[in-house]
Image 1 (tube, rainbow, N blue to C red):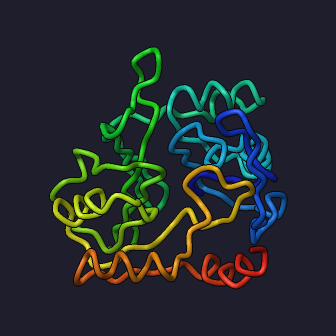
Image 2: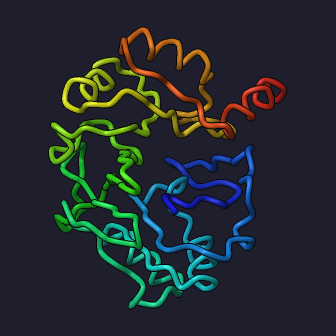
Length: 224
């Protein structure tokens, strides 16, 4: 599980963002989880109450930056289940491997510890990159060949071109597509329009809208 967010909203820069698109699966219905990976501390990526519920029901270890682990420990998650993410470290869960990557954007906390991660995941011969909120290519990702990259539709074209220039992939899966109110951060985009924009920007790349996001597009228009 990556960046679980089941809350009704989160605090952001002095105001509250209400989550208008509820999770497809309620958190208390999750009965199996091999591991939880949290990229960073932003409220729409780190939901301590939800993580505690998943952990209490499944015993899944939680891999996250140090400052996230501190927040989770305060929420009552046992220390033995909290695993600090380190640059380039690989974790194995059966036939799934997860390698944590950092070194991009502003990635250190006030104590000089990496506080923002992404991940490469591999299973059954398939390799994908999950970006979290990263805006730039992690140094250790350069030169890799992947089946797909999961990115949010960054508004600066050069950020997307940078991924195409340094990483070999043919499919880009759009993420970060839920709707929020008042929406005073990078959200609430029209993903069909974003798909057209990115396919023009990155010739040869197939842009995929995940089924759940696609199913929300008409709902978003109804909300206005």
